[in-house]
Amino acid sequence: MSERAHKGFGPTVLAMVLALAACAPNSESVSEAAGRPEDAPTPPVPPPASIAATTDVTGQWDVVSFEGYRPRRLSGTGRAAYADFGRDGVALRIECNYTGRLGRVTDGRFIAEPAGDRVQTQIGCGPERGPREVRYFGFFDRNPSVEFVSVDRLRLRAGQDELILERPSVRRLSYLASMAELQGSWKMLEVSWFPPGGGAAGIGLSEVPTRIVIEGNRLRVRDCPEVDLTFQYTGEGQLRKSGGAALPAGRLDCPGLSDTADGPALPKASDAIRLLHANPLVEKAGDGALLLSNGEYALLISRLSA
Image (cartoon, rainbow, N blue to C red; front, side):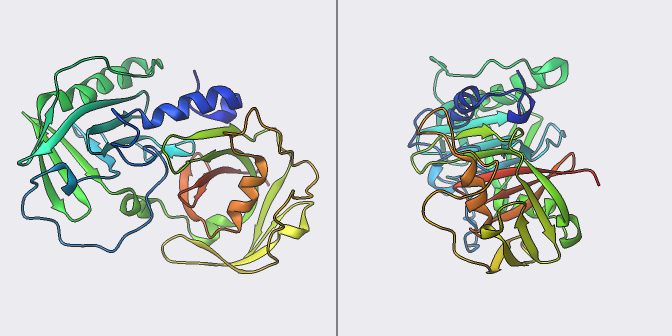
């Protein structure tokens, strides 16, 4: 099975797989939407001298390295590798399947509960990723130690094995696109929605003919001038709207932009356009793609050849 919507997922299948990105012991026990591109940035505070409880590390954490291997940050519109801690356990992924572990952090150590029924997707991961994933999931059954390296970085150890985690809002800064890298014509590939209650749903947009064009600080949607805007691009990689009309509350009258979807719990193509007006954060997603996100929606776009 492909990991990206534009390489084979239909809307319904993609929604089912993305929903398992929040495959934690309890939908309320891990971050609200494990696997979403990132949490909203929060002001830094000094880390505690030692980690006493799960509340000290609750939230989203990207995998920086595991056993020396450094995974990519993004997979489609979601995070590729993470350990997101919540009240009752941790949601896990390292570039392939999704699962979770019941447990708690106490006195500087993650204490796993005895293995019971565990929900896990069953995607074929290949000869390298498959064994690594088994070791990664099993790492949390070994009651690893947990310590702060800095306010935004954790180190976990079990025996000789080491896992480094970093807050997504910090890690994404290593993948910022320059203003020059925004320029050109772009094809929409995938849009995902991360509802407040947890989980995720997405649809592929590769068949949508609508194109996004960025020229200087002007963004336009081809054949849909009502949604054109100008923007400022900040040093934190935010595309901040500075001019342009407010979008209508109803249907967008854009040729080629259809809002048909398989169900009410799925995002629509127009949600991708509305995201452009919502001051999205931008980062490089690899293979000539960019991810635009605002915590609620994420849009993957790919550069068109000149």
